[in-house]
Length: 513
Image (cartoon, rainbow, N blue to C red; front, side, top):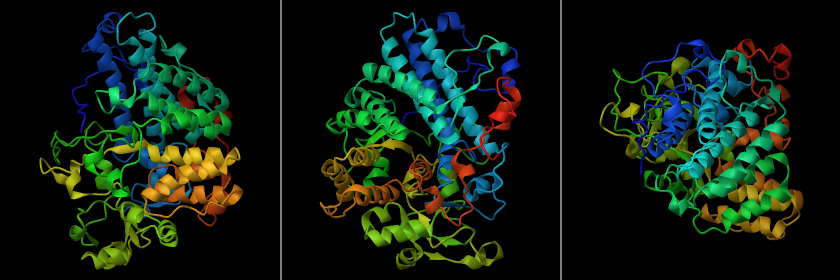
């Protein structure tokens, strides 16, 4: 089921989104008065949906998707594209080299997370004294989404400004960086309120909106990232013991258009094709409602990849799987999950497709290591003939799902010395993938290694791998020979933020930049 966001025209937040030039613009005339807007329940609903709308924009903005930017440093995918200069700012992130403090994709992600936070703050602040019946639910959603954005920011950037109130003028905007520990405290405070006031998944009428289980799961994940494993376990158990949350039947079902916002989904960003985009009305850098990044990540056309026989359409060739990932599937005998994630060249040819490197620039396919992606690829059933097909993919981004909860719980149990329960949660994911139970004698570090490998396979191409390697202190080993250094553990604070935020200076830049 799709949810159309395009009816939202929620623009009265003006220039408080991030530290950008819009802050000093004169107020627009086509907006409603804030003093009365939040007095109506329907307006509160519109405001909350507007937060999801900003999330959709950030994760799907062409060339600058938060989904893609977060994924690229991992060892499960290469940037690919046409050559080393094709979207150079993305190539730089992928190759760990020359990552500029003015990288436009990193800056876009930063700015749009803070825009989303600003709209969340607007909702929270204006509902403090409200007596409306939807006050608690709306505030809880806004706090969940604020928590999500701060968790993404501190994961990628480390210490960041903590903005919780609306500035009343330019002089109020300067905000110093706060330690990650302080960011985590605020995230957990927001999630406590969200857990207390969000409905269960079955009671969420608009399926794209978050539930109590999503807040509990995110709280548990944050605690794992803090290394507070014992504290995380009750939150994991609350989600795992709730029958409203479960795995889809097969790995392929997870990514089917028929299971969008399904029982495995905890946070999902929806896209639609009903706007019928074509080359004349596509809004480059703007709001399209379709997921343009699916076209971006499909196997390259121009005669290079022939994929019609396997149910795919040609795309623009970004984000190809690594040979390391393909080899990991093969080593695990993980055929079911591999089919839902990638297709090797041998399998493509065996199924009637083909690869012709001579059609690529220089006779070689940039960053190609013998496989194309299936997860988040250009599936014919996920786009519409209404408009230009490559501009109208409806594929949702599953940002947080139950399988990840099980693997995080397995890690927490393992770290707390409860290996039997860790194996229970791990086997749920393995069995869904068609794999046998792990040897019950596996324990300690060996079990942790198995969890790490399982997560590599299950969450491939979902943006988790690199940040896990960093927090596990495994990045230098797993990424040896790639150009990675410890500098890359964080993205640079955008130079635009340092230039405009007078509470920051060059000394606040992350190490090495």
